[in-house]
Image 1 (cartoon, rainbow, N blue to C red):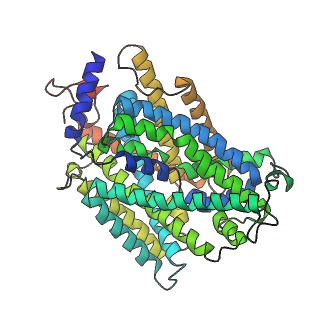
Image 2 (image 1 turned 135 degrees about the vertical axis):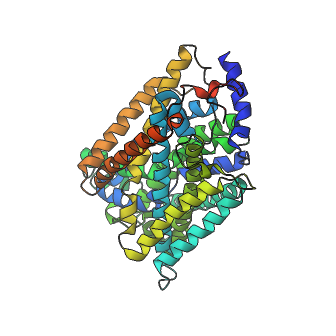
Image 3 (image 1 turned 30 degrees about the vertical axis):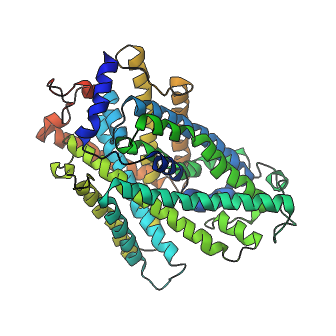
Amino acid sequence: MAEQLYDEVVDAQPDEEGYHRGLGSRQIQMIAIGGAIGTGLFLGAGTAISKSGPSLILSYAVAGVAIFAIMRALGELLTYRPVAGSFAEYAREFLGPFAGYVTGWTYWLFWVVTGMAETTAAAVYVKFWAPGIPQWLCALFFLMLLYGANLISVKIFGEIEFWFSMVKVTAIIGMILIGIGVLTLGFSDAGDTASITHLWQDGGFFPKGIGATVMTLQIVMFAYLGVELVGVTAGESENPKKTLPRAINTLPWRIALFYIGALVIILSLVPWTEFQPGVSPFVATFGKIGIPAAAGIINFVVLTAALSSCNSGMYSTGRMLRDLALRGQAPGQLTRLNGHRSPAAAITASSLLMGVGVVLNYLVPAKAFEYITSVATVCGLWTWAMILICQIRYRRAWKGGHLPPPTFKAPGGAWSSWAALAFLVLVVVLIALDRSNRISLYVFPVWAVLLVAGYRGLRRRTPAAVHAVAHDHLHVPGDGGTGTR
């Protein structure tokens, strides 16, 4: 009976949400790859290398295992019920209306502040070629350009993300192939000194101690933020039951190639002691090899990575905000779709708030990036934790016979999710211990107070919006259940 109801709901879901399933396998795969490659790798890795040395490779590997556990947990939920507002929907179903409300708004905030940060970053990168252009003007231009693209159709979003991801992938694979050539054939300016022994001979694999390596886990986790974006595409994938598991299953080799592989090559070509905080390790490595246009190439790649993240932010905030509006937890006008079946009203509202980043670029350009990224990591950690907890609750429900079993089971079941949850708690503790990053833990309680106040007000004004029935999607249209929208 549960399986029958599930199939009926999945068949009806696209019509209920109103979206067009226009994202094909090719685009989903590249969105998944692009979500795992961001400015955290191209820029943030320089700071992490200077703090821990070659042992950063181990940090990326350990964090990668946790990320894979999170994504496989998400995979179970996505193949069980693929919906556009996935994280909030699952939290609402398995943890109650308040959890869904908090998760939806928190994930929306995460991508709004990320969009602000990435338009800021993109504007900074443009100054490499055109230092005379005001930073705020570049940020506004990129914001308007991506806003227009997201209004047209989901296919345009998918194509933009496909090519943005292609640039990032090409840059990393190119660097790896060149690096292998330098190490094996000895050509280029780095040929005489390049050696894999740099991984252990310059002070050892843990030159600053195991404690320093552990502290880099928070930097590493920031680099992985956005990997869960593939879950938001569930409601617009042409065949989510096939494309999403395939995209998630390729995550281990993506991490192995793009993160671990790239770091092994970089740290073999250039001793870790030569990397400096705030300087891209890719620029330093290309410069050591002797490629004259290294700085320009990598600047173009990180510009692409920033625009990719902002593009993803507009896409996901629009879907999440509309999902909240459909539930009565955001203004009803935000449910409107345009002629291309894109959530135009929700995208517009989110983009206007991202425009605050443009104002910050005008008022305090030197500190804009720092101001608007302080909360992003904690918002991401909350979303990941909700995915894990919901998967644990879902497994309990299907084992009790209340829900159909998953068609894409996570290895290790609930045990791997509990282990990943413990790892996320460790990351929060590390953030608290880091003086430069603990500001995010100060900002989040303020956000929590705003959420609680908003929820209480919503409960007084619109009780139906917060009194959702558990497993409400199992009510088929016409049965009087709250699943009918």
